Length: 235
Image 1 (cartoon, rainbow, N blue to C red):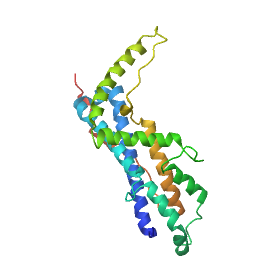
Image 2: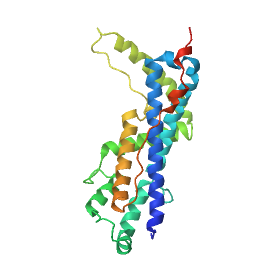
Image 3: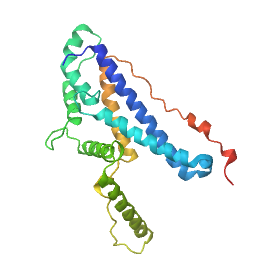
Image 4: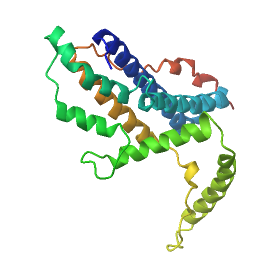
């Protein structure tokens, strides 16, 4: 596929911007989750609003990451830009000598990370591949489409969670076995989402630097704190 460098620049900037959005939504969501638990009085005037905001922001982080990791041919995503670099680097280099030298071994490692994996691939990252599967399962089963099985699995999960709480409280029962969540209920944790953001950002910035494309600084604005008024907490 032939892609002009300017068009590629627009594409990779778009991906980097979506990663910045994902980082913002993730950071603010968990700031709110932790705050609601540790300083509930700070959120007392609108606790439901802040809880729903945190949940919505987390879902937005998941959706942005699914866009970035999408392997569809028409997607503006990391797999797509890696294929474009491979196909167009030589022609870009001929017309723009300030472009750096492409490390093709590194490019191949990056492509392996973002394509369908085989266990015998040298650079197969089982952890990252597993996180991608969890990410897309979450989107497909609970956000973009709410699966019927998901509803009943969730009810089962609540039973398992309550059972585990009782087991953990009973310190004398050392041999008790914790129940496991149904597969459909497995969700990417905060550290998992952060790893997915960091992996994709590292790829984008590697090739933005190679092609001398400006990288915008990441800024997490916390101006939502201006909306919180702890001087009027509920009695």
